[in-house]
Image 1 (cartoon, rainbow, N blue to C red):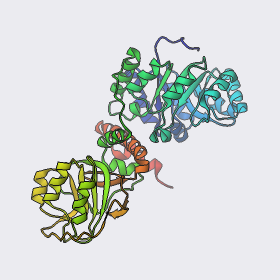
Image 2 (cartoon, one colour):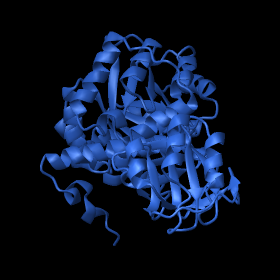
Image 3 (tube, rainbow, N blue to C red):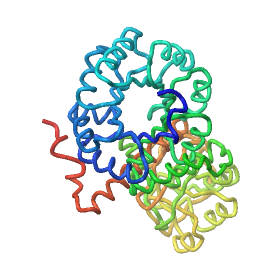
Image 4 (cartoon, one colour):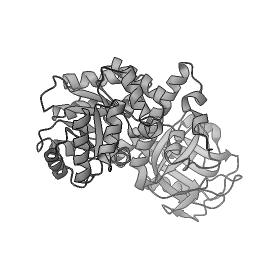
Length: 432
């Protein structure tokens, strides 16, 4: 197939799951929404082996089946395995040695399959694309991998360069949604490969349909360019603190810090305050140093004397702060709740201390047994408070969003009658 051979853009669904039965169910729903090709993702192949390709071929005899094997060696042997199992297209890693690429192509020709080269992690993707076309691959996939996406890498800019240099069909993959799929097709992509935004959706058919409509119409609403901070905050607004903790491998949560106002969410950058028992001077002075949208994070060291109360909370609200976290006590809890600013603390008591002025503002502190540096992102909700190191904020936010998508899909499957144990295949994955 060469550019222009297909009438409409191809939507390839990446079934990056671990269980064959779930993959087949999601494949059926995605086809109902207008998806074209079905990809047995690398995690699925590693989990289920070639048998999952056989099952996909059996269940979808008229569909193009892509085996994302990411071949790096023994090209002929692995292509033969995939092709005999029923794959139409087999993926090799673009970084593989030329000898492996050529062996894969020869085997594909022998067994009636085609080869797609995946540029994930390629050092010079444009030059390598030109070489791959000369070697004889059938498709080139410009791909920012999941871990790369989490750090903000974007495959669209690379694809726009690649597409000018090669004549074979070009696919694009990496965190695509309806809007970015439309932009990719408008920029010349022949195939859009969508994973999480379809397979982790609670309504797979609707998600696939939205992508189908967007690429067929080539219309997407222009989105104003957001700052890096705005993008991080936007993602964090849509996820929970448990999602974030999961994304951080069950880390980041403060201990013994609880919401004083249920139902209030807080997101902001930390302004840290180190105080001593009941000394509220630095906590109040920090309000003046904080910027709109910041969160005060205060270490007090006492459950019995409060460095924070209603007047300080009102000052924060007037300044536009996002919230307050106190490792220790707060007071005036009735006033705090009327004011409505999110406040998280260990407890509430009547006692206040004195403004002695000891302590520091914007130094590294420990709050809720978590290290907090100025500028770290602080997220609080009814579950508690998590700390996201500023250096990894974008990555963690993106990973938390993927966790949230996965959970929404699991909720949907449980609503249909499965139990959590059945959906997660717990017995299969128990350590033996």
